[in-house]
Amino acid sequence: MTTIIENARIVLPDEVSEGRVVIRDGMIAELGDAAAPEGAVTVDAEGDFLIPGAIDLHGDDIEFEIGALGPRAGSRRMPVEVGLMQSDKNAVAWGITTKLHAIAYFEDEAKGRSKRLSGAIMDAIARYQDEGQLLAEHWVDLRYEVTADPDYTLEAMAHPVVRMISIMDHTPGEGQFADIEAYKSLNRQLTDADDSELEELVMEKIARRNLKGEHQARVGARARDLGLLVASHDDISAAKVDEMHALGARLAEMPVRIEAAERARSLGWTVTMAGPNILRGGSASGNLNAVDALAAEALDAICSDYCPPSLICGAFRFVEEGRADLPKAIALITHGPARALGLTDRGRIAPGLRADLALVSTRLGHPVVRHTWRGGRTVYRDHRFNQTAN
Image 1 (cartoon, helix red, strand yellow):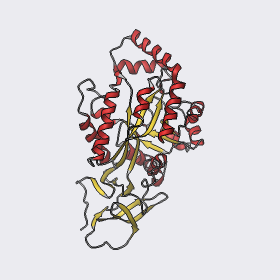
Image 2: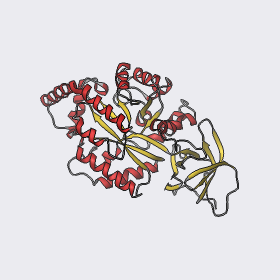
Image 3: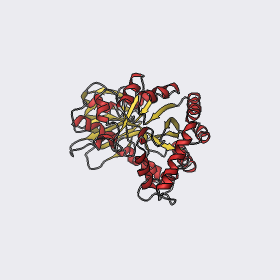
Image 4: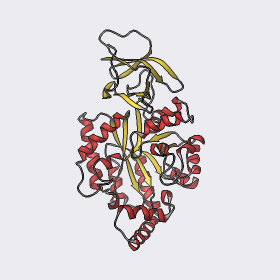
């Protein structure tokens, strides 16, 4: 089957070019003005932007979809399959064609996380993906908390849908929770614990941290054996980055301070910041602003965190504010993540690559995805816009 997308502003790695893209048998066949072959499906882009399908390195929105997090979190959750299908639809509606779900494979009652729930999510992804029932391509960014028992995580790392392991340290007094009172405040909102119970929780977490060196080393070694990308989460200093580099980390997830982002970049890591940080004008926790990371040339990728629209909207916000040109901004949600994951078949618009594409309009005053293709197949279409020229 041949599809031609014409009258598009095509966002290439170094420029925006007007013209058409020819898709044949799921691949990008050519760029240019060649005549449409007989029987081809022609889509009129009407001057809107054609970008590579977005790649989300870290999104935990599925936890909200199944009710593990959010205003109605509790023991009565939505079926995992329902949450996965909803997350899948949200992804392609915002131009995301490859998504890594950030899944915590440890017990965290306050945040509704458990090994059983995480295992069910991973099994559902594997099953539905094998059956061809998903619109986007889904994988897992397995989260490991250094104060948790690593044995379960070490086992889960071999699951076929796991592509990345994130090593996190949410110990009170460290990383994102350098302010212990901020840690207590968050847990006070999530639980019914009183002050004495919160103090006990803090002391317990700090005591467990004494084992972090051994735990991290085991997880890092297992990741190397399995060929998984290792990410370090919420790095606060250059010293922390150096420590994680020795364990094999090559991606910085939402560094807390600019010195950590710059050190990671100097070591050749991929540095990613959360899209909501861009849209909200800064970190919800008062940490590093994505704008500052971009200005310091210490930003390679944007992830959705908990908000799928923030990938495309965050990239376009950088352009609107004059902080980056369109090719550079779009690379943060396409080529940058693809390079981090070693995905050479996507992330750019070029002949021979997989036709993962999104058509984006800004005519409503903000980015809206009109049409999403994965492997040349339509997986989302907004019927408010004209689509077909023949």
